[in-house]
Length: 336
Image 1 (cartoon, rainbow, N blue to C red):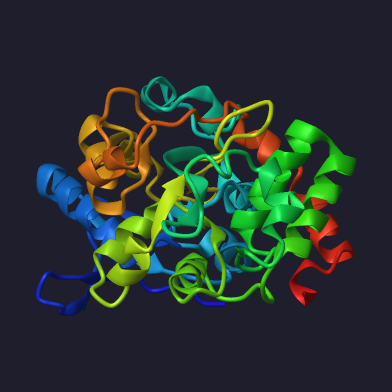
Image 2: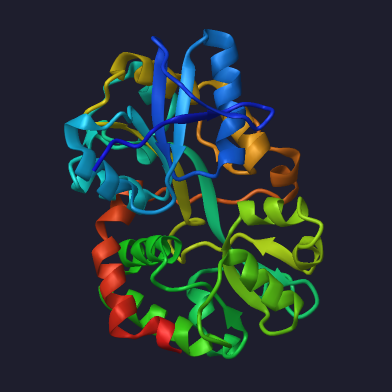
């Protein structure tokens, strides 16, 4: 397989090939509009050219196939499951940085330096403003209660976001209780899992269900889209907790590739991504939670109110991914 060509998209939309002395090459699973403000800010300050290839599917396999010929220096992706998959496939390398370790709390980075979180998102509940009372649902365990039978919507149980949540349930409550919880969740579904998190909010707006699991930043995306504003205004965000914990968080993050040809420049960019400036850009652009302490959330995120974040380390969530997948397959969660 030939290495992926890197392209830089200028502000006018012109696509040009790049080949600079000081550069950083990125494979990204994050959407272009979320990453470009960071690239623009860094390049304008340092003069370093940041080349990016957006690869939605098959990114780990691409790196594995390219091996030492890969032009990629680092990866930007979402979800702890995807970050640990890169490590498991042997396509990352350890990074030792006092700057990153100081800026990113220990539970959101790999002890061996193979990956680092950049932002967090809560796996929350979208609840109908008219059909669900305040305080009616407060924990993840509540979702398996039969009172929600025929009232719950969610995307595929096999999606990384739901597998991450189930992994956290296993870590908190054990395998048997987690299996029973997943079965209760399935029993309460109003329809076969399909679509993304925004589709579940649309279903609430349409009266098909009353509550749904969803990542918090989708509220920001819906409010910014005139076609989806009605959906967003039909729900409120509930930050559930575990019976013995807080609200489940997952992360977006970064890793340096094993074959990084520009490792020194990549490290500088990785360190900058944990700075106050970069974390604030992330917060304002993506409506996610910055991981560096002291960096303000966006006004929209602040309007959702405070919540108690779960303290479970991301490594614990990832460790139970295989068991979570086995549970979802065993109960045929998507075969509702």
